[in-house]
Image (cartoon, rainbow, N blue to C red; front, top):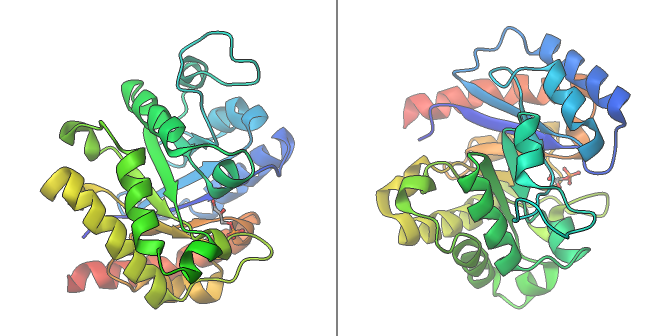
Length: 264
Ligand code: 13P
């Protein structure tokens, strides 16, 4: 059982620098009374907003992540962003393998694996996203796909580094405007599959790795999700992009998480 809840948002290709700064200021103010020993709050804005985001909030209040990163430190990689550049502005988390990166931009497990290794090398928290497509679900191969994405994406990660990882389970069919939210039961079961794959790789240390659920999370289903034993946190898109809506979700799920923690 994790000591704190993990809750955050990826703002995708939304929010300008000005939007991001005002969003972060509002979110910081709305959540100011919440003990950060109980909650790891994070926001992953667009690249152009990262420097201003970091200047707006310190990492003990809201961690800031990048939506992508190159595995090389420098070189002839037009359009890519280096770990050194993200280090320079004090980024905490690197989101790796979001379904939109895998499926629109054709990123492969082996590329994502290089990003995980590079993120660890530079002291970032890698947030590896995994999830099956609708077709894979219909073929009954979701569990195999999840295990492959975990084992290929984390290939070569040492046991020492394993406790620095975060994982997000985001079924592709559940994400975005056309997404159908997973039921809490389904998400919990699949997160169990992910946790088993992590245990095969890293043994007991894998208990330290938080596994978050993402995909059409809203005020209603968030409370059902967070009660489930294998769901350590939530990774939210649309429902978190208004700071006050996000704060409402946080206020609903935090007490339920604490109850679950007490009962475990
Ligand atoms: P939605 O909550 O908008 O479905 O997005 C989830 C997501 O992709 C988080 O990374």
